Length: 106
Image (cartoon, one colour):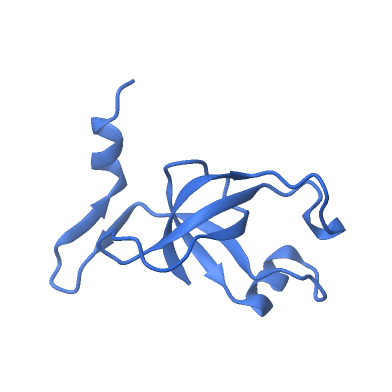
């Protein structure tokens, strides 16, 4: 699993049947303190997230197939949750979605 920011939606007019009706997102992996790490990936959204959300991504084929309920699924990355906060080993708060949300304009 890895932390990621959702960068945008991915639209694929031609795709394998498994992806029919699935929301696809472009996600960028992050370090625990929020720095970009590695290359962006396409993930199936099972948590109802959107652009700008910090999420938890399952990056393992067998787990993805179990979540999708298809033992033969050609899938690897699945967004499985929103991240509320990230706490460092020393107890410092590295990310707080509540604080971020309170700073955004309404």
